[in-house]
Amino acid sequence: MRDDPATHGPTRLVDVVVAGHRGDVETARRAARSDDPRLREAALGALARAGALETAMVERALRDPEPAVRRRACDLAAMFQLSGPLLATVRAALSDPDALVVEAACWALGESSSAPVDELMSTARSHADARAREAAVAAIGSIGDPRGLPAVLDALGDRPTVRRRAVVALAAFDGEEVRAALRRSAADRDWQVREVAEILLDAGGTTLE
Image (cartoon, rainbow, N blue to C red; front, side):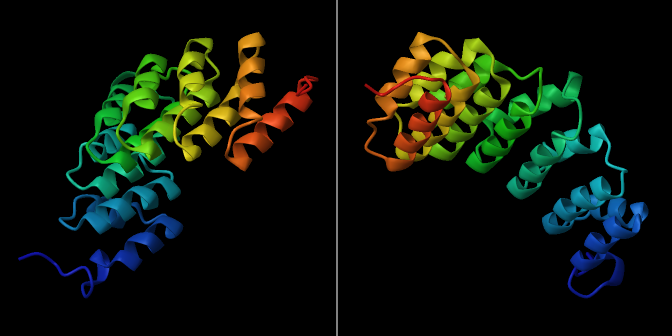
């Protein structure tokens, strides 16, 4: 019979959270094996806080059946140097059926020097959910790899939230193509896009005339 996480001591959610602050690694590890996805998610954070989170745990959590656990695992993957099996598992999360997992995976990859730029470009251009496209554009801007510039430029024709992220991402690139895109964005119908474009143009010594 399963423990009820609301009533049994070491399996209560609050105990798992506190375990991370106290360095109680054993409680956190037990919670990571719980049938309750809330405990599994909390266990990841507790283990990270206690300095006991391992890449194998993150890889396993990235394959968890519960999207919230996979999202948390993506967030925490950025703590590590993404390479080998961990990088492969985070890359696979770009195809996750949950858009928020894809969003989190993009963020983690944007923190990595070994990020798959081509796959991020594909996500930025074709993912059905704007949150995932926006996150992919942000990751490309964070990485600053020139190969990603075409996808950022394409994103300037997307919905407002994605255009805002794309114009910010242009700060990572230079060249006349970028300045021309900024001048077009300075006339965008969204005021936040216009504002960022104008700031970047001014910072680059380019006038709007």
